[in-house]
Length: 297
Image (cartoon, rainbow, N blue to C red; front, top):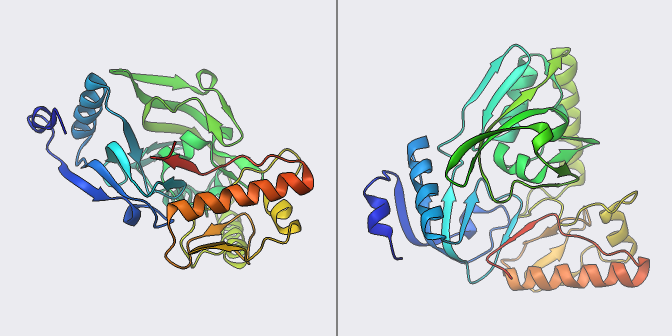
C-alpha cells in the first residue's frame, strides 16, 4: 500500500500484509486485510491513527472480533488490532479507568472482586471495552452507558475527553463510529462482593445453558425490536436449525446464527437475509442487525 514506508519511520509495531481476518473473529469468517497493524504501545496507536487520517485510508479498529461479520473478500484498507496493546484497568475507590483494548469480561471480574456494582450483568459479554462502548453493549436489562462518566477518544488529530452528556447513546448504538476510543472512566457503587460474584456465576451459567458458546458465533445477530425478542420471533417462524451451506440458525438460541460447518460470509449473509424475510413475512417486523459488517457493502 502507498505510504507504508512513511508509517514505518515512526511506527514500531508489527505490519502485516494480506493478513487473514477470520482467525481474529469469533465467527471465524472473512478474507484478508490489505494491511494489518499490531501496535505495541500507545505511541504506535497514535502514529497509526495520524497516518490513517492524513491519507484518508479506509480503516477498521479491531478488538476481539466478537461482534463483526467480515466479508469473504476481506477488507480493502487498514485494520488496527488494539486488543493486545491498550488494555490496562485501574480501580480507585468507586471510579474505574479502563483502556479500549481491555477485555470486558476481565473488567467486570476485577470490579466485582473490588466489591463494586454496576456492570455485573455484562460479565458474559465477550469482546473489548472499546467495542462495548462503541455498541453500548448490554445484557439482562443494563448497558455500559448506565455507568459511563467519560470517554477518551482521538477525534480528528486531537485527544478529546467526552462526558457522558456529550455522547449520543441508545440501544446498541452510539455516535462514536468516527472516533478512535482510547479509554473510559466508569462510576460504580459499593456492593456486596460475594453476592455480586454469585450473581455473575448465575448469569454465566444461564448463558452456557441457553447459548451455543461451543461453536463459532458472533452473539446475538439481531437487535431486539421494542417490546419483543428477536430470538422468539425467529423461533416462531420454525427456523431453528435452518441451514444454508456451512452456517445455520442455532437450535439452542434462534438469535444466534452459527458457523458450525466451515461456512462462508456469503452464506451467512444469505441466512441473515432469509431470516429477516421470514420474520417480516410472518410478523411484519423488520429485524435490524446488531452485528457489524466489515468489508461488506
